[in-house]
Image 1 (cartoon, rainbow, N blue to C red):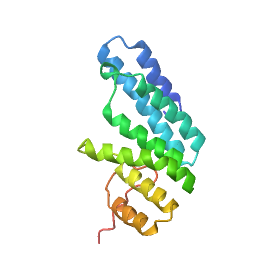
Image 2 (cartoon, helix red, strand yellow):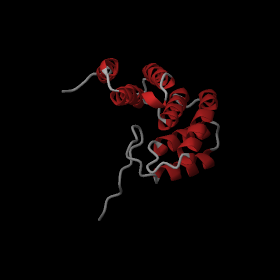
Image 3 (tube, rainbow, N blue to C red):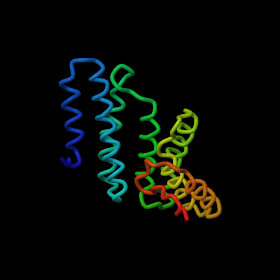
Length: 168
């Protein structure tokens, strides 16, 4: 049963509305935020920047209206900052890069600083930072960041998936 964009969000929202148990409510509200973040990521992967921003706003709104008892999660902050920075980066003009870089760098600092066991999204984030650096003409620095990003074995990447080298 394949769901169209928005159907998963709608199903999670319905569950959140009908949840009686606080644990169910927390889980359902977290899924609403998670689904909208994934929809923003898929729109971004298809270069649909306006669609990505629309889904990002829904994800941000869901996260902003949560507290610890209703599904708030510190990891979502990193995801939202990273997504926003990558959406604003768009096609990578210097003007867009200047707006996006503070969000991308802050997401990287939080991702590394929270000492997560599996820093999901670090590969995508590093490639986006490299694009922002490249937009400002610092090609050597951009290549160094891409070199690091290329070695990240992050299997959550939508745009730059890790492809293991062939074992001979």
